[in-house]
Image (spheres, rainbow, N blue to C red):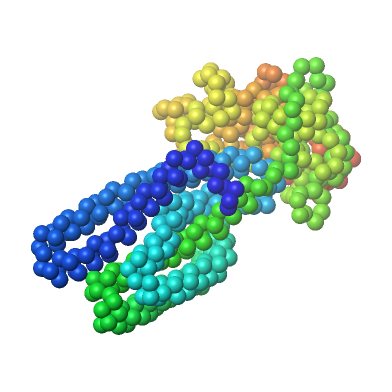
Length: 576
């Protein structure tokens, strides 16, 4: 948590002025009981109305000055806390963007969302209250004790006993609740995960009639969070009653001692009222301090969780070389490549070796879980090979700057993801400077132009979040167009035409083959028809390349390819 305070840099003036004005407010507040004592002992006792009026005007003046100081302090505290959370959120988001797929897989999306929202909000509240109350409350508590000694030393000894007892209760509860609030935030992560899965997978849940099971699952996670919050709340809830009991006991002792001292003529009635007022001030400030401690406990727990993410270092180090296509004999080369995901029990890819020249089309086929996506994810360096080398344009991908490497590659993932905006805005994700003509060309190659031109607004047609207003095939064709706008040297289609009919799929492959620039194309598919015309087909089975060659060669030599092909074209088996 301490390391996060660096984000208060630039708000030095606010972090000084906020507590300073609160201390000024507290100083004026400490004089109020003395003025009240003077009103009682001098004004009321002597029935001096002008004196009473003057003292009342003084009280009003103290109140107005205190109010102005309080508002000023709250302004500076809010400005510093908001600026802190803004800078922290920007930094955390940038840090998350720099993490690799491995770290993202380890932490989880729901956890990162909680860090970005709830946790930062809790820390912001903690900073705000600390700037306003952390110095004010102790100042009032010890200031009241000191002022009590100026009134009467013997009666003030009650304060000496009460304040350590109160400190013991407050700080004891704080230390006890800090780990509990950390568990509460972890429970919030699980609730958010369940909520996110239910909202994103609502169609699947309804299709399989699993609403009741998911409702029970959510209730279970929510109940765990509720129980953790209740337990932490019960501990925190002891703060107010215990402080009230101790302070009320102090007031009783103070009145008893004061009554004896008044009876003997040592103290005046006004001075006893002043002592009781100081004790009441301590009570009010300790209630505030108790709430501050609870908020700070939550803020520290949340800050430590944010810091844990900030301290995560990406295992993938950035290179320094810029890619250069010209003169390269090979576009992509795999040399004895193996891949094992973090904490996985077995290899996902094992000893893969092949090379692809510019302009070649490579088909990658295999059963579910055979490692097709894992293989192509190594080319843009979403993951690093655990053994062997992956080369692009003749150099190891680890040598390249990641941003420059990925600028050379057009990647179309399995799941078609579109963003809220227009079709043109989504296409410009591939190239911000793309002209209307370049976008139209990409749409024609991807076979998306046929439905885009029919829309009233064309490329300016709005796209809802996630492309909800488009069909599966339309979304896939737009994501392919988005990759083509970049005019990449390497194009990867990771099973990105699964929603297309065979005729459209065939047109798409023909257009890609004929497109200018001669990119190396990787076609990942479970359809034999989609890869049969590729220059080279790689057959994967349980992470191993069990076949490599043309369609005709594999039909003769590769049992796995034969099984896949004849399961999709049974008539050819009968013809044979």
